[in-house]
Length: 267
Image 1 (cartoon, rainbow, N blue to C red):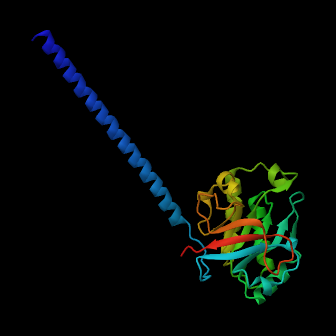
Image 2 (tube, helix red, strand yellow):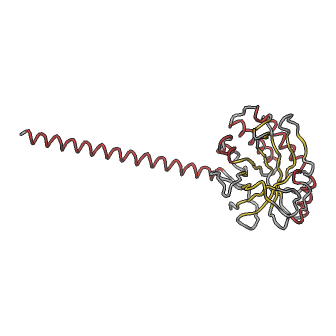
Image 3 (cartoon, rainbow, N blue to C red):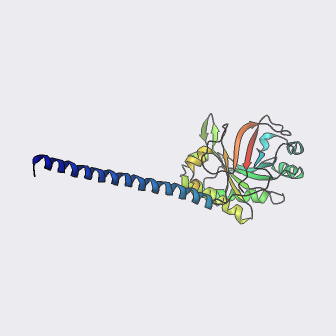
């Protein structure tokens, strides 16, 4: 065999090896892409299967609502009923410094008058719990104080930090809880509420959902209520209710500002 023939043979062999290697790399990339795609789709399907949202028939795809506390002053619920489809009423709070629990001074009136005006409402507790036991205590507090009222919508665990001079303060900050600790407290609240025959919900900001709790580990029956004050919600996960503003207005509400909420039908 001449030198030229040997050289050509070597080049031909090298080309075939290079082609085979490239084909293997392409096949590997395709397989990896397929595995990644299947994983993403499986995650989405799993999330949809595990979440079982509370359903209330507002007879519309997006219902308009407000959430109120004693800070909103005296409310004329008959006037408010002309503008809203639902409401959430604060029933109790835990102090962010001393940890004591107290009843919202307008809770009973708000529940009574909202019911008379035909406004379906849920209730919430502003939590500063730092243990599972305290979260359960807050759920029992809600249950005790709504016993004689027609609460049709979920009972809400309001998870948010107290702020002073734009900085988070209080016992919840100093507890140094982990994401799983916070999630366990939420689930403990949900368990007590469900056992009593009510639907549970969690209110928190987008930041909390994305950074401070394990959303995938939340109770599957927990209604997701997200506070996100932007023209369009920035939270990428599943949600049922969007609190879009803390500076809205509503007929019958005497305070300058009131929280505005949108509840999306998930039938």
